[in-house]
Image 1 (tube, rainbow, N blue to C red):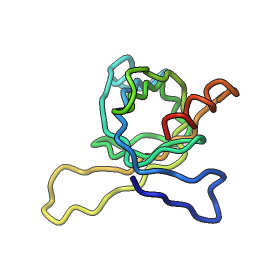
Image 2: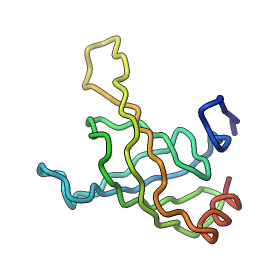
Image 3: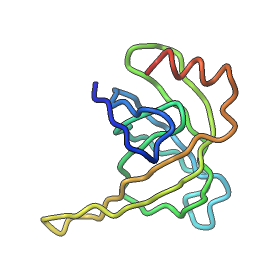
Length: 118
């Protein structure tokens, strides 16, 4: 587990084993309704970061399901894409992006659940 923080973050992010399943809400292309599964790079009470093979637009809303390896419970929440940064590829392979997501409408119960996991 890795702790990260900088002056722009409200919460410390932890590098944890967390599977992220997501679906893009109201996508303007053929991705609407399609489910994707990725591994989170880090997670905090306020959001998460993951790598993805497609570019996502800032402001896109994602329906997320988080599954932490240490617990059988699945957390369901929504998130707003707040950054999408291309990753450098040394071998000209398929492009990848780092996606930053801010959780939307996190209530006290969800915050407590996230704190339990991270």
